[in-house]
Amino acid sequence: SQSMSAWCAGMITCKSRRSRVSASGPQHTPLFAALSQLFSGVARPVAKHLVAQHWPTLLLLAAFAAFLVVNGGVVVGDRTNHAPAFHLAQLLYLTVVVAAPHALWRAMPAAIPQTVRDAFAALRTATPIFAIFAIFASVGATALAAATTRSHPFLLADNRHVTFYVWRLVLGRHRMVPFVLAPVYALLGSLVYPSVWRAQGPLISLGLGVCSALVLVPSPLIELRYYTLPAMLLWLHAPPLRGAREWRPPLVAFALVNVAMLSIFLFRPYTWGDGSTARFMW
Image 1 (tube, rainbow, N blue to C red):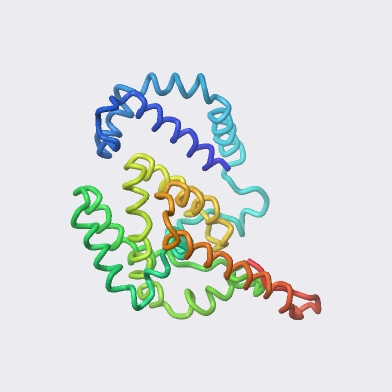
Image 2 (cartoon, helix red, strand yellow):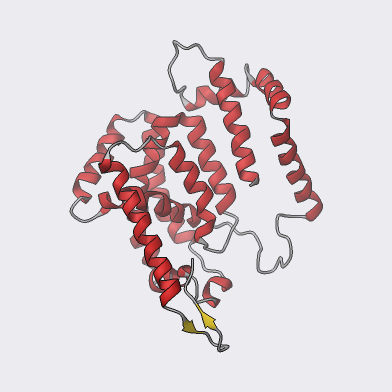
């Protein structure tokens, strides 16, 4: 919720900055120029607008900052098992959650050649800063997967959760698995993030990335529900789906996943170690 508040404040700032730009100017100012404008000439009027019109959001953020100082961190309760971590691989898992329902069909074997060609074509026509960002992101995906893929004791202790099997059968199967999956992360990312960048411009895209990282990176535990808010924000700021070719794949994917999970939950119970009835769940 605090990341959402920060996102709202950031969106207000970006919109305030845009409202002061001439309508005849470009829709998206280059990133460095936009940051320069934001923190120089327009900083004071934007700050006044934020305080006057959106003080409840700022008050919530200030209260959260005070809580962090008084509490000594974000964790409430058992700090041993909920210690913050530097888990950058969470952003790779978010990429899968965001891209899979909408673009997984483009990562199927038959479609991969055209998908790769589209990705390189987009890279050739992109602005220099975005091309550099895309290259570093692709290379960084391998480094992130190798350096920060980790498990948590809770993940390994509860075989009712889907993530237990994702780790046991895929992510934790072998130490080379992160290296093998890195190209998949990069490919799926190329199908989603460039479209968000083109639709929203550099400032909003950067804000989405920062807020997503604030939500996910400190968590050592892999939980699918952690990706819900970042994924929804990314979907909402991507270009709208036009035509059945674009909206049908995510609709079918979500329907199949939900039917499968509800069916397993209802009709495949099993006996847990203590004799109680257990059911598979997210």
